[in-house]
Image 1 (cartoon, rainbow, N blue to C red):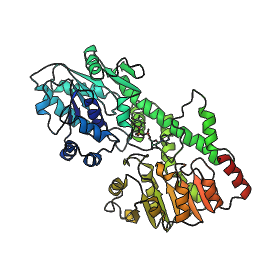
Image 2: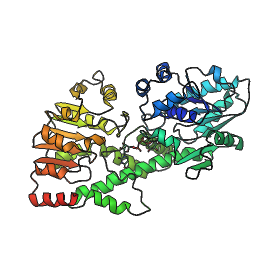
Image 3: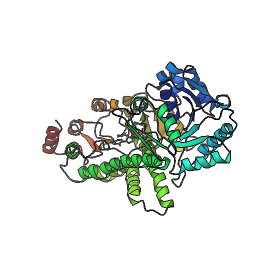
Image 4: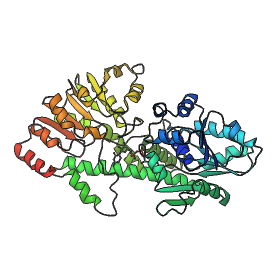
Length: 473
Ligand code: UDX
């Protein structure tokens, strides 16, 4: 099949590259010439400056100029195209609604070109970015205005988690396709022939509106799991003595009906999807006169979670932040990515600066370059207080307390480094429960404040420390 992918961010680039693996002829198109030149070079470092996804550069290198082509102009490749996937950015607006301006501009450019095709075979335009319910219908209107002949619209949402995108594209849990006609469904079946009738992968065909809805319900349900565990599970263990977070999780999720996904308690979920999608769905409900209390609470809990440890540190540990130096480990929204969009670390930095810290010593294995962009001193002179370091040890050196914001595996063995680098009394604020042997540190005079744990003061009496240590074993 001849396929055009419009927009080459995380979604578009991954989709174009992994679809080309199946022998389709794929043209990845973007108006950003710098991006296209980087992808066309097939040099991993160049590609990863734009989309840093494990294995993706290799897929590109294997298929480029055979099945996969990059271009800033689709005028010459529009003839004979079977499907166009729209993967443009759909950022949130101040009121939570989705900004469709990039999408609309791309759809208009495309429609004008499609209207002039000589070959008038059936072409289907597919929405792959997350777009509000009804956007396929809106697209239909744009195509009609341009008098595009023999065209159909479809919705085929993308469910890829960052960091696992290549793997998950090859083995998705399900493929959802919403279209109006058998003809359009047939085109998509040919594109995804490797998944149709697959024993494990569900291939779901439905209406465009249902497909659009599936994406919003799936993402907001996933965030609901996380907010449930953060707002109920973690809170329980923080409030009542002797409630052990790990045992609580095991006890609850042993029920086959209850998901284990989402039970990993944290200082909030970030990323390009969850926050944006839940705000958009709330907006969509409200604009149809529907209440959205549950979603609003889920969203509020997640936002609260991003900085509540700083409040707890003041309240429970008596910490003062004014003129203190804080080591901040982890800047990306989760491990194995350099992506900082909606990352908890963004709010943590604002909260720390708001409390008058003297300095923030930051470290992240991948996101330092991104961080410098987000915390540009030209935008806010307070960002001058942030310094970037090459290792956790360097970030810790000379700090008064530690805040762990991302679940990078390398932070798990941190207790030895802490002991060697910063003497007690010292407060460890753990937003990701990354220090399993925290009781050892408490015994040695460190204070520990983690998500899902009551504050453990360095002066904790020996008996309770021993009991906790025994339980942790
Ligand atoms: C998510 C969805 O998983 C994916 O299906 C959708 O298409 C896009 O949004 P992604 O944003 O890449 O993918 O990340 P995900 O792995 O789901 O994690 C999102 C955030 O939740 C991260 O900050 C992560 O650390 C956090 N999280 C995840 C938790 O705090 N607890 C958990 O149990 C799981």
